[in-house]
Length: 454
Image (cartoon, rainbow, N blue to C red; front, side, top):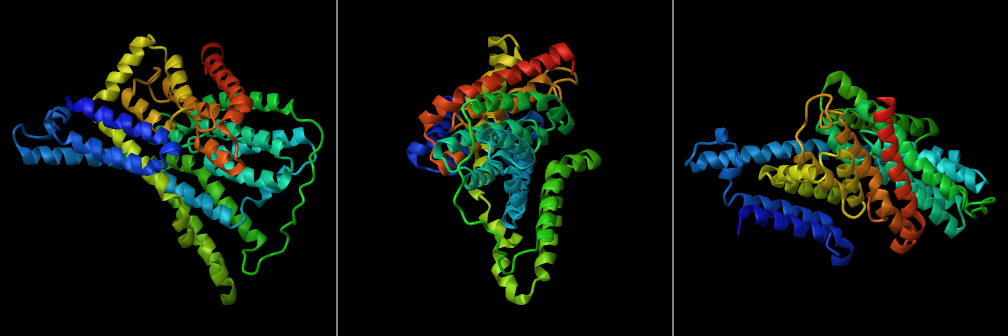
């Protein structure tokens, strides 16, 4: 059998296993790592046709092996910039959360009106997701909703809006979603470009569903019977120190794009700088606590927070991105890109629109990774140039499109688990709203480009 076909079959089978994780009960990270290993193992059976001729001497096995190692290390280096960025961002958010940095969000949300809470939840989730990430923001907002909304059916509607707002907010920010991080790290979009041109479409994709949902909510909220956590636990940081942790962490995340534009260093350097500063500050805070109190707070220090970072997610990204890199190396993605261009006559609105719909069914990370391999960066000012229509729409569609099904995004999956939302309920109540918002955002982007001239 053709070697290229074998690699593609392995990838498809692995992809199917990832999509069916809830049925197979096999963690997607394990499958992704197997895909990575099997694809490159098959590649090694006959790598010569897929390696540039100037990297090795024909007939020299040792030079061919060295060339393959060089190619794999190049792909691994590119992948690692995304992985280190994610690990740094995840750690920063966890440190802020563990030290009570998000308590103020709950206080801002408080209101008796169901509709007023709907809009506060929508905008707070939207903007927090742009700074943090859609997964973390969703968890924070669901925890807050449990303290504010007693009625289960009302809370489910709010939870559905959280999924939509989190995905929409992540789409216009270079650090708000894994897919935008990938595109930004590759230099396909700039921070300023994606914020200026995708902000309004993303906002529209959230506001329209929020408005339609608000029509279903009337009256005031039932009071949640919970005991307020006003007692200060011995050994905790002071209110001023918690605020300092919050502003260092969240402010640092906002500063990362600025750091990149000033230094021209890769984004992961900026995120590690922020982590280093936050780590130093918290160590200083804890070192000043009385010795009898420090022991109880050890779990909140960065050294212990690092142990709670979701490494399986990091390994999933490693496996899937390296498997996609193998497809790129053998030329499959370039061929697929040309086929799509031919089929849709170069209409990038249709191509990215379909990718967005697919992202509600399967994971958007491999979809975006595949698209990045399918299309080479074009000349400035073209659809495929840096900040071109294709890359900006890809950031929007892959992020917002995941809201159309509860399993279509990390935010949706975590909310599904926390609130026990069924697939059918979400499809009936929320999916059509997400679709309307998704299409409205694409139309808004088209108007920006063709009528306003952005």
